[in-house]
Image 1: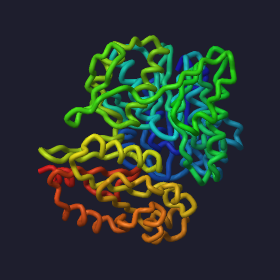
Image 2 (image 1 turned 45 degrees about the horizontal axis):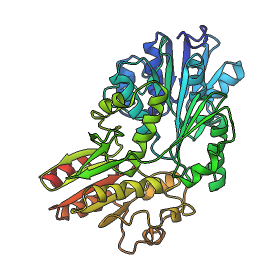
Image 3 (image 1 turned 60 degrees about the vertical axis):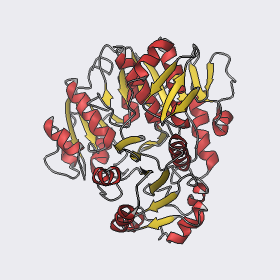
Image 4 (image 1 turned 90 degrees about the vertical axis):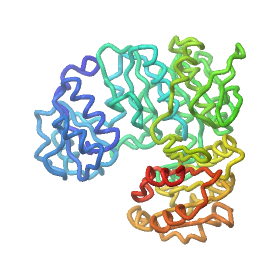
Length: 461
């Protein structure tokens, strides 16, 4: 890779089966690097994709003997632990060790770096920008946290692209680097879409969490640009225009109208542009992406032209099925702010239909009794609100048992239905009358394998 040190030709990835890590392995392989990797568990689609490229480890597990002085560098994923045998061996040999964000920075030193940060919306905003740039045949590299329509990889690193668009996660960089990922990319153009306390296992207080975004904002360099949601109170606390050498750009939801269940943007020339996504949060995402694209030389009319064909990122308010009087969507929502935004948007988009909404509590924060009160009144919009969690996930994350009554109390919704058995959840959904009723399924998991396509077929028939 021309943009990385010329010596980095032989690379080993520890925790190569991760969502973003296996995409990095494939991107490096595509660039001609010699790539090996290890992991103690590799699931689909990573398993099949690595196998097709000849990069699937012969067996799962950690093998220190793979780490030799012949390697130019080791890249360690967040899934690995600090005492990982391969990582310890790399340290003993004095090999160059990168976290994922460190390596992406190394690969893009000579590029203009655009980093999209925020507790919510960053995947959608990044996806929007990539869609617009690709539509207009611009050269760019990228690293994004979701599979996008029309893109076979989630990471692309090339020699000649002048810019790279990076989804800037605030979570830790690696098991041996406790800095948030988005601090390591050293952005030229930075964006903060919103701040809502998350990752309670790493940032125990709201102030600790917000501080990471303040650091990110202050890292904006001379002649750099910081774009931010001007209506988010937490964002306002960290984006005070204090540096005269930085351009600060605030944005809000794009002007629009909703007509017959369709959202149309209103441009400055009073033209109406139909779009395939909806909701206040997506209207903010569109404004954010438009400001970034403007910085990259994309004119307004060209932005809207590309936007008309944008269907959204995978699992981000994604339509699963539609019938004459019902529609089924799934969403990656799990944080309280995203849950509230998605459920409220859905109800506003279809005000005459009943809404059944299901949330799976799946992350460490969402299942933590200390964090649960953050969900108070975030699930008031649906007519029928359902929460599901698997008690085995609590055990795996070493969290105490969670009584269903505690969930009802935290959400402050007495009629909240709580399930801990996926079969019982499926039975409840099958029993519903779906006439003039929509279904919204929200999770960063899978509802323990619930077949959403089959469910959608039943709902919309």
